[in-house]
Image 1 (cartoon, helix red, strand yellow):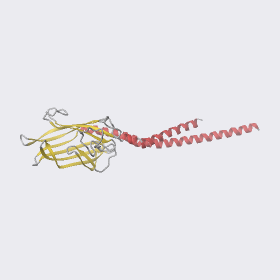
Image 2 (tube, one colour):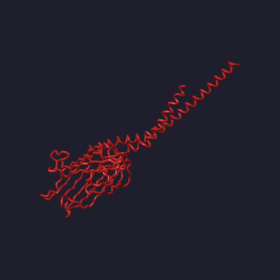
Image 3 (cartoon, rainbow, N blue to C red):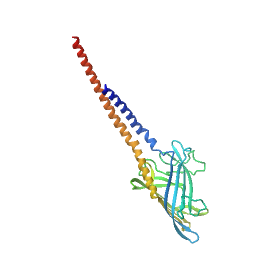
Image 4 (spheres, rainbow, N blue to C red):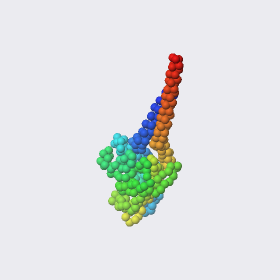
Length: 310
């Protein structure tokens, strides 16, 4: 009786584990490989900026820091598309400058606000999403992350200065603080822009982005940007990258998120299918042996009764 009862328990457990394996294979990837709607991320960069001093005609170098804040607008988003509000402030880091200053402060280099929508799986911009404000600039390509399961191939990446996407060319791999990343370069060369209102010029930029491929999370980003007047006079030379503390924080986040993805998409199917199959087989074996024991016991009882009656 105990053998039969235990066999039924194993069959039930095996069936449950097999269902877990199916769900982990079919349903879980569509849930965990999706940008969450509660994103609220602050990113810090630092470096140097050389700016032309109109009074002296000389380039002056100063330390600079950047704070970029990306927040999801859950109310404007839906199951497939997420809306982001992203603000960025570039400040000359002197006299204990805060992360951002008002427009009258001479330490301010730039302050921008951007609103855009991206696909929660592919991370591609959705230019005409109905949740965007009417004055939002239509975006294209990737904007603030790479897709889950990023590939060793070229993508397109949004450039907010030019208001269009540029090729993000795959360049190889690099390990950053224990995280294997794919490296992509985005170049702009001699692009016409307005240096200031009514002052035309050109723009060069080299952005290098290091992406953890499983999650598509950016682990490091460096940017080297130059602006020139039409006569070739350089007016800005900006070189920035994630701070060391920021890189460490992103590496820790990536390790946690990769473990969660592995658990949901790798280990749960293995445990579900392998463990479920073993439990089912063991349960069937116990039920079979219990049935044989019962049959043998019944046969003995029948023979014993037959002997008694004779």
